[in-house]
Every structure is written in structure tokens, then in C-alpha cells.
Amino acid sequence: MDFAWTSAQQSLWDEIAAFAQKELSADTLVERDHTGTFVEENWQKCAKRGLFALAMPPAYGGSGYDTLTAVHALEALGYGCAENGFTLAVNGQTWSVQMPILRFGNEDQRSRYLPKLIDGTWKGAHAVTEPESGSDAFSLAMTAQKTEGGYLLNGRKILVGMAPLADVILLFATVNAKAGRWGVTAFLVDGDSPGISRGSTTGKLGLRTEPFGDLILNDVFVPEGNRLGREGSGASIFNAAMIYERSFIFTSHLGSMARQLDDTITYATRRKQGGQTIGKYQSVGNRVADMKVRLETARSFLYKAAWMVDQGMDATLQAAMTKLMVSELFVENSLDAIRVHGGRGYLAEAGVERDLRDSVGGVLYAGTSDIQRNLIAALLGL
Ligand SMILES: Cc1cc2nc3c(=O)[nH]c(=O)nc-3n(C[C@H](O)[C@H](O)[C@H](O)COP(=O)(O)OP(=O)(O)OC[C@H]3O[C@@H](n4cnc5c(N)ncnc54)[C@H](O)[C@@H]3O)c2cc1C
Image (cartoon, rainbow, N blue to C red; front, side):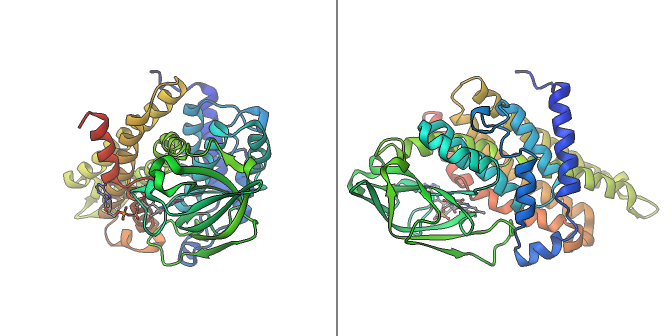
């Protein structure tokens, strides 16, 4: 393993961090976080800057970077852009929509969907969760009934990131409920298909600028050519796609942790109490030291997952460990950042409390921390 960045990789990091700081301004973020406002213009800027292209091959409009380089670049996005809901949406599309299409789509599907997702024409969503199936994802109830030329889909998905805006929905339904996980099948559903209704979920704890909500499908016709993989291969596709989602959907949150640490150090070296800067107090210094150790731990897990994927190794265990570590450590660092900032950290203007609220969702989506532990234990033979 070699984690020494080349000058090209480091320049890419610097350029993307600078782009995010300048172009994805945090000026109105407190207000937008309050109202849950997504900024389309910023999405288009990211598309133009090539952020959806990073991990995609040139044949579909991608930059052709390896996973480690793409991950490093998207970390820079999180460093420069304090809007964790928005950066989650960018990563969600990259890792949970584009990557499964690239890996499991046929040539027709890849060339129909990837260029438009990469250039910002379309947005994507990944929909699996239902009212009665969350952690037990393969017990889903959405049905896909075979009909002439395709399938009729019926059912409801909930808690889906980008659901209100998605043009393309990677969606899982069953072609045979009695077959359990062997009936689960993946589909690429066009967002404007007749029979889809969408509900926006408001009142979220965090990640508020990522639109989020329900998808209700009522006799939605999906052509056979939009089935991803074979009938009944949805569980395998989901599990393979989860290696990417669990490992990398937090990539920009890693950048947030780095920004949060820098801001906390700046604060601790400026704020004076009792005649000295608070950073000189051992308890404050210890907290900052813990934040640094957690950040580097999270980085090591995530970079190793990217390296394993690039080597063609099975990263299932690493992905579960990465997801567990990065999500939980982001929560812990966010809480410590507030402790160091004192009462100011509790107020929206400082942005520190927003990071805490944003971090909590991470221990739930892409499989809760309990589920990651189950997976790790099972992979260890328990
Ligand atoms: C911010 C956010 C974004 C999301 N984005 C998406 C998205 O884009 N697409 C999508 O499809 N879904 C999305 N989800 C949904 C998310 O994947 C589910 O919330 C998650 O999988 C948990 O399912 P659940 O909410 O039904 O909880 P449940 O499965 O009901 O779990 C409730 C509690 O029981 C525990 N539990 C359940 N089963 C077990 C078990 N076998 N062993 C141990 N403990 C268990 C869980 O860990 C949890 O503590 C998102 C959720 C959030 C919060």
C-alpha cells in the first residue's frame, strides 16, 4: 500500500478544495439549512468541474481516475464545502447510482445513463428502504410484475436521498416475493414515468439541503431494457454496490472532519480564558488530539478500502469496518468540536452544531452501525 500522493493527486485536492470554497459558498448556508434549500446552480457547477466524472471511465464522459484518486478528490470537496447534505448527494450519486450502473449495467444502459448523470443533465437516487423493510432490506414488498415488454412496479420507498429531484432511480423490487432474496431485482426507473408520485420529507435532524423523501409507484411500467442484471440478481447487485456505498459515501465527510479539526485548532489558539489560550489547557489539547487521531483513523480505513477496490480485492469486510468507523468518528469529532467551541459552538452561526446534526444520519444510512457489526462478526465466522 502506498498512500503518498503524487503531485498531480495533491494538485487535484488543492484545486477542488479551492473550487468548493469559492464556488459553493457557505454565505447563505445557515438560512438554507433552516429552510432545507438545495441549490441547483451548485450541482451544475460540480458537474462542470467534473466531480461526477472522477471515478467514471472516459468512454462515458468520465475522467478515468482510480478509486483512491477519486476518493482523495471528493475528500477535498468536503473540506471546501461545509454543506454536508449537498456533498452527501454528490457522493450518493457517484457511488450508489453511477457506480452500480457502470459495474452491472449493459452497454446500452451505461451509454444511456452515465453521460447524462456525469454532465449534470440528470440526477440519480438509490431506493431500497420501505416502511416495513429497513435493515432487513431483502424483505422488501415492492413488486415487479412481468408484463409485455417489461414490468409493472407497485409499492413505496421511503427515506430516499434526492427522491424529489431524481431523473433516474436505481430501485429494488421483487419479481417473486415467495423467493425471498432470490426474487429481488434491480431496475433503472426513469423519474418521469407515469405512476410515480413523490413526497418530500421535511423536519430532518441534519443533511437538510439534500432533498429527501418517499417514492410511491403505482403501476409504473419499466421496460425490460431497464432491468439491471438478471431477474433475481438484485441482492447480489445490492451487496456489491454496498461495498462502494459503505466505503465511499462518507468521503466528503472525511473532508468535513479535516475542516472541523482546522477550525477547532484555530479557535483553541485564539480564544483566551484565565489569561491564556484555551488550547493550553490539557483537557482542551487532549480533545483536539483525539479529534486528530480519529480523523487519521477514518482516513486510513477509507483509503485502504479504495486501495483494495483498485487492486481488485474483496473489500466487503473493509467496507463494513470503514462505514462503522467513519460514521461513528464523525459524530464523536463533531461533539468534541462543540465542546472546544463552548457556548458559541451551540449556535448556528458557528456551523459547528450543524456538523453534529449532519453527522448523526451517517450511523443510520447504508446500514446502521449495528448492521455493520453484524456483517463484520459474520465475516469473521460468527
Ligand atoms: C440520512 C439518511 C439517508 C438515507 N438515504 C437513503 C437512501 O438514499 N435510499 C434508501 O433506500 N434509504 C435511505 N435511508 C434509509 C436507511 O438506509 C435506513 O433508515 C436504515 O437502513 C435503517 O432502516 P430503518 O430505518 O428501517 O431501521 P430498522 O431496520 O427498523 O432498525 C431500527 C433499529 O434496530 C436495529 N436493528 C434492526 N435490525 C437489526 C439486526 N438484524 N441486528 C441488530 N440491530 C438491528 C437497527 O440497528 C436500529 O438501531 C436513509 C436514512 C437516513 C437517516
